[in-house]
Structures are given as C-alpha cells and as structure tokens.
Length: 281
Image 1: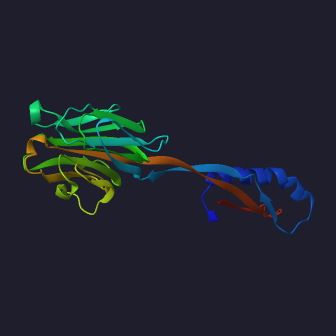
Image 2: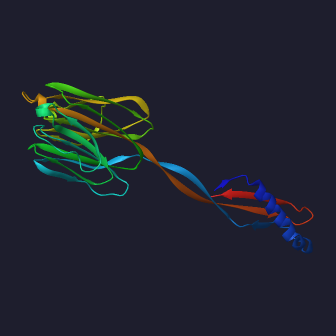
C-alpha cells in the first residue's frame, strides 16, 4: 500500500466528517479519536505492452511437375509468406494467392524460374512443367504493420548475386527473408549482409532455397544478399530472387485496475481536529 495526494478528496472527507459527526461529538464527552473510513474509489491505469513478431511455422517441400501446393497451419491474424523455385527449363505459372514478384531467366525465350507471394491465406500453389522444384512458406504472427522489399537477378551467369537494401522503422522488428536460387544448389547459395540469423527452413536439393529471420532495431543501412554459382551449362536457366519482409511490433493496450480510499482520524470538541489519510492499492 502506498500514500498518494488526494487533496480534493480529503477536503470533501473533512467536510463530511465535521458535518456528520459534530452533534455526536458535542452531545457526548468523548476523549478518544474516531476513525472514519469512506467509500473506496476504483480507478484504472492504461499502458501499452509490446508483442514482438515471430515466425510460428515454416516449411519447404520438393515437388515435381503439375500443380504444387503448400499448406501452413491456419491461425487468426497470421500472415503467410511463400516462395518457389524451378529448374528453369519449362514454363511455370505465378502463385495462385498473393503473387508478389517473379524472376524470368534467359533460356528459350525466358521462363519463370522463381517467384514470391504473401497472403493472409494459409495455402498457396503454382503450376509448372519442370520436374525439379521447391515450394516453401513461413507463417508470422504478433505484428502491427509490414514493409516489403525484393530483388532479382534474371541472368546470374555462372556466378551472380542479388542485393536487397531495406530499412527498419521500429525497434524489435522481425525481418523474414526468403532467398531462392533457381537451377542452383543450397551449397552454392551464400547469404551475406545479415549475421547470426535464425534459419527457419532450407532445402539442399537441385534448387536452392532458404527461409530465415532476425530481430533488428530501427535503422536504414541494412541489406541482405545472396551469391550463387550455377551448374556447368545451366547458367541461362538460372535466376535468383530475394524477398525481405519487415514486421513491426504490435502494441497492446492493457488496463491495470487499482483502488483508492481515504480515512479521517477525528477528535471530539473542543479540538474538532481531523487527520485525513489517502491510499491506493
């Protein structure tokens, strides 16, 4: 319990004490103080609590030609990020839900070799005539707003790179990255620019793909890049893409209830003295 200054409340308390008990004090010869406790005042304090965004689920699946689908756990308020990569020899569609960015290689007039998407839908798909493909996704929750960035390299050759600069507007923001090297291998997909990140999912198959996240504070000089090396004779089929999503933290209003009250320790005439005290708990 702690003391507080309730000057207005004390004035009213003193007035009530003197008016209500003056006759009783005057009619009786009392030498002991009387403790009067008045009604408790219920109040509330509002403050904001920060919820840091987090990746709640992620996965990458290898797949073949035809319709390829990935389904993530469904959750209210979650956001879903998607990416796919192909061998780049034949045609592929964009994502069915929330298509965001694609990269087209230089092989045979240009083929869609990788793509990104984002959506509030927990399932996504694409169609391809390629045999060796990957499709992946990540679910993010606990955020307030999103900033999005991406970069592509449609002709990385035997050795190429993609650089994506980005900024962070608020402290404790979650950065989620999907990096894809079409017609590459994970062992040849090197991430630069961010260190000590958390890998959510990755595949080490004929197509290179990785999903990772890192919590960052406010800043404008961030970047992420990938460097790849295509297989011999496959450089025209290659294509690289990086998607960067920055999730700002969420602030929740939390009410805190507390009670306040006042008491008066009063003495009979001739002193007519009252000593008020107020508290909150």
